[in-house]
Image 1 (tube, rainbow, N blue to C red):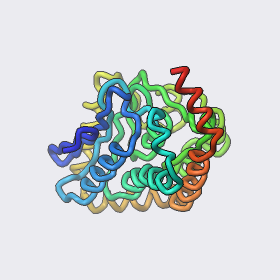
Image 2: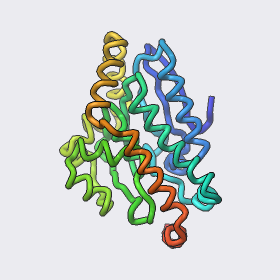
Image 3: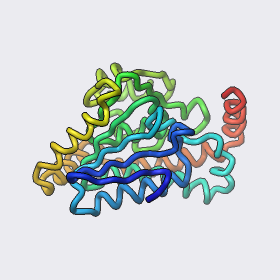
Length: 253
């Protein structure tokens, strides 16, 4: 079992936990590799009927680990490979066969917010805070956000959220349609598990059909969007101005 992603199964429900709590589950290559492997394994496992995705500690996911930014941009090839791994998580969640219930608490920022959007049903704890910091840092969104977010919140609101990076809470996420439910944090995992068990009791083939049809209908060109996102994100990572912005940001945190 990976130390950065915990992976457990009971009663047909696979619980996958991001486990870098000291870094608020910030994204790095090790976490990405383990997460992609865990979700793909769950999708391929007949005994897994539903997935719960959550984060250990005080947050779901604080986005890219900016302390490792210099390593992530050492060469164009390495940068592209890193961004492709981020997109591989979205492919595993959105295009996989198993329904994914997100149990989201604390911070869901950048890539963490994208993974929230990727979930089939997102349950948020009352204290959850979300935002997209990418544009302000000189990079770009990933996770199919440019295809999925406008379908959920509308084109104008999607532009606003990505462009200005305004912070919003669980109540606003519910009002925008980004959250399925908002619950007290003490009951978050219990609620997510209960939802996943309900899914697990349904005919597996029809659940997979529903996921495949509804996701492809909702975002007809999510693959095309991710290709464009990857190109834009690579350009952002390799831009010297971005490195300067992130270096300045790091001194302030």
